[in-house]
Image (cartoon, rainbow, N blue to C red; front, side):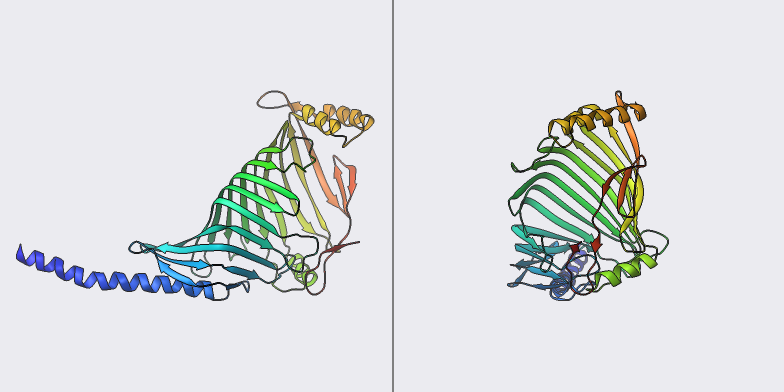
Length: 346
């Protein structure tokens, strides 16, 4: 028993410094990542960092962080600010990193005319991701609860938010896949919408094939992406909003003039009350409403859960949006800038 006791003492004497060294090194790696330059040129400024999390986690609490991302392709420059963030990982699984945001937070897009900064309040806002070797899949998640977004005079409240993404360095699969799930979306009093101010649920998944080369010249980046056969696949979109129950799928790309083009399908269940709501809101006159009702009646079919639904093929070509081969809208031309980001129309 005495030998066993001395063995345990020796293990503690050896393990305690090793554990402390591992906690210190992992904390240094977290702080170093915050102070470094990201893969897309992201940089961060902050008001100081403090270590914590002992004994099971290595964390860094960053005061007043300001994350800046340069423009790239069609994405404008972005600035993200928060009161505080806490980044860290468990000592037993150092590749699993979480970042807790303490709001109020602000997202701004400098240089993007017409996009106002958005202020965010949240009871919970946590990003998590796995740090993997080059060439592996990189997954990330963003979870939020009781969010309030204020942009100019518009206010949106969200009960729960879940965004997940996967990045792959392979040509056999889409480079990026992003899924979204929102519940309890409440629009502000200024929203003029036909289906009410509460959207029960929104969910969807988007897959992007091809890589948009980084750089401030959006036109050159998007042309290179198009030549690489880049495309965006809306694999799933589902919206439950008042009487509207809509689902859709589509594939989009760019034509030779770098204008959006593509095709897809829209399914609308319980379409009669949804159409009446559009008419009552004055978005379509009574004569046109009667014509649309007749057209939808002709193509409607029984829905699996009862009632009826319509399925419409939609297409976008030469800036003309059609539904069931009927032109319904002519879209303005998008002028992608040559140089610093500034999205204009003509």
